[in-house]
Image (cartoon, rainbow, N blue to C red; front, side, top):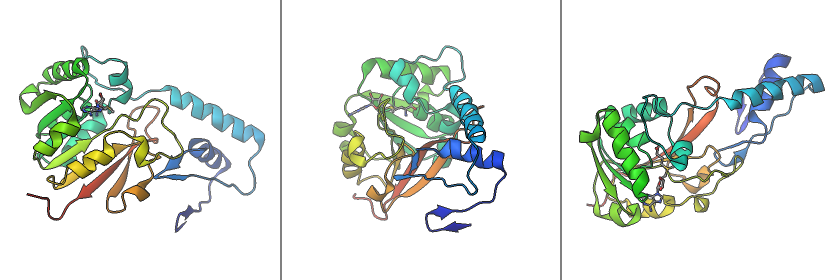
Length: 245
Ligand SMILES: C[S@@+](CC[C@H](N)C(=O)[O-])C[C@H]1O[C@@H](n2cnc3c(N)ncnc32)[C@H](O)[C@@H]1O
């Protein structure tokens, strides 16, 4: 049963301890999750559940599955897992996408594999070279036009059907609450993208959605072994009725 922002459930001791361990201290959409369990769990049940959860977190989502993909350190930790990038691409339904800050190409390749044409912009020349290489590896280089430069300068001159942005979250992003001001690219791109009918932003699960009241947030879960139930990111989709011409 859900009452406003409160959910109640009747669970076994094992399931309640597991849920408590998974949700402990994390925020979704800007609100920290609090779990209270009645009757209280035994210490042994709490300890066992936290150990299981810590083990589960050791599994990392696979990034690119093809051998030979190139990634520097930031490209690796910021890469959208391949299966999710492809699912996002399918959601785009063959439309024309501008990927502002494409990194090593995880999302651009996902969009292109799903049939979209893509303009991919990246400020870091070496990472852009990796993205180009990775696009060739996946056989979609002919559907992506790569540009080295500042997305903030280039986007206002472009048109497309979707502007996609996966801003750098930083390794130390807050699991409890992330505000719009803590993420580069996001606010200025929102202002600079009025010619795009849709703006899609891939954001930390803890992103405070109150900053984007007109956007639709969707939680995307991991699908790889070990993290399939964890929220990997929020996708905020902002649709404009009348993009500026
Ligand atoms: C989170 S990563 C993108 C990861 C990508 N979506 C993927 O799945 O591989 C963000 C990227 O934005 C780039 N970036 C940051 N500011 C930028 C700017 N002003 N113009 C272009 N790229 C920028 C960073 O260099 C970084 O590679």
